[in-house]
Image (tube, rainbow, N blue to C red; front, side):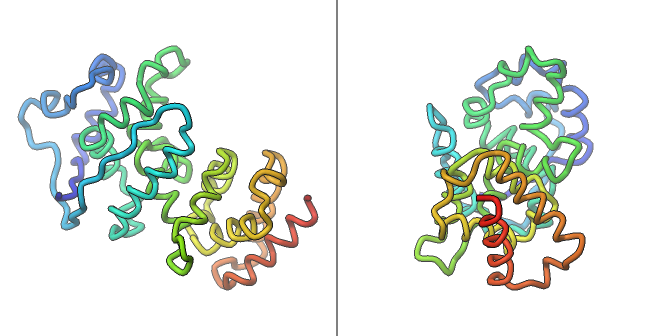
Length: 245
């Protein structure tokens, strides 16, 4: 199927009208065509993807996130990083192709008692203001980015590090809500060391992992991380973990 984008003006229309559309967000049926009353509100890209049937979440959301990451990243592996940072793509997908999944995984009803329900809807169905965080808060974009920063074709199981990434919510959030997370060499170096040392559960509590992330951020200020190869990055991570453990 063709990969579509929502137009700029239509995207803005939807975002401005989040509160007035709350009842529509409760609907189990896709409603954007009716909202735009027959006007052209999306346009096709040059990218084609296979149909993706996402697992519907039940009790263990991390397990379903892992399975769905494999599906989304495999199907969308051909898109560029620039395309993957385009809100128009993911807003189209959250409101159309993956609407049923979004209704199950991020039901708008759970946001209505929040102080700013429109912000909560924007976070999952669109992009929030903080772009680094937005990429992993959008309900579908997050799955692609989980795959992008962890997929390693040189491993027998290319998604082995993805499983480490999604073994604990703190790992995914703390690692990906950083500017350096768009460099998969850095993220895979961190995940590789965790896998090697089998520290997913023993080392990774929230404070330890945040300390590790702060350390890598600080390194970015004194070292050009992008120039280091994977083995050097892994050694830096390993040394810091040994200090914290």
